[in-house]
Amino acid sequence: MPNPPPFGTTVIGSFPHASSEDLCGRLIDALDLPAWPQFPRRAFQENMYAQFSAPLPGLALDSQAEKIYFQTSGDLSSLLIPFYESVLAGQIDAFALPAEYAEGFHAMLDALSGTPGEWAKGQVTGPVSFGLTVTDESLRASLYNEMLADAIVKNLAMNARWQARALRERRPGVVIFVDEPYMASFGSAYISLAREQVIAMLDEVFEAIHAEGALAGVHCCANTDWSVLLATKVDILNLDAYGYLENLALYPDELAAFLARGGIIAWGIVPNDQQVFETDGPALANRLREGIEHIRERAASRGVSLPSNLAGQSLITPSCGLGSATVEVAERCLELLRDTAQSLREAA
Image (cartoon, rainbow, N blue to C red):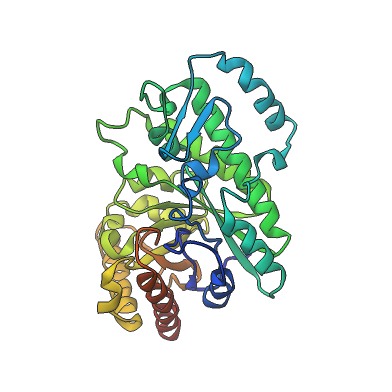
């Protein structure tokens, strides 16, 4: 699959709107890689963890109390049998997003069907973040239950495949991002996971995306040990370049290897808060150019050469999702994505 357009624009997924209305059409017009919108304010089912939970056995969802957890006191093994039968049989439709859990996905499919274009983007919550957030009834992270951890990874991998397949029926180029906010805590006492475990879990999801002919991305909206994510089979690394760009300079060897194999960096250079009203596209483009040059100089000082022109391996995104922003901030963010990308392309 060819790369997306140089400095192509897309979003993380979440929006502050209460419903899709005409938003999908505007996203198709505004973005090079339109993404289906998630609406966490519409219903608890659109929370980024609840949204992908429907196929999981033993999972309890209380939308009134806004709680989601696994019930492990019963016979979990017997509940897992039909789940794994669907996985082994490749029954991807069993892992579809129900309309009540993802209004924006189904609205975007309809909107894409009626418009021309080359690319589309989906997103799924990552296994590390899902498994550390969703607990059992004793408040123990489900990721530390071996049976549940494997089911979580496979559920998310199968959902990613289902999304990719549905989107590829409407666009030849598809990208699926795996959202991993909890990777910001990797390496702390809070997370008892080995580097190899994290890579294996993520790679299982990335390989599932590749199986459908789509590109796999990963999004982490804070600082992390980027060497872990760069060591996976991911195609696109998405980071908060507005707040944490320089941290990438700490990993010149890993970054060089990632770029050498054709990896793409999705620079989250557009802020997702009130700061959008204090800047413009040319200023953000200049901020990104200076940051990239800093990374290149730091790499050179350690004997590592990075490409002089990254236009063909760069996307532009907001720093994080827009679900907690105001509608006005979200609308301004879309304008800044367009203007920033235009400034970068003109200077490339």
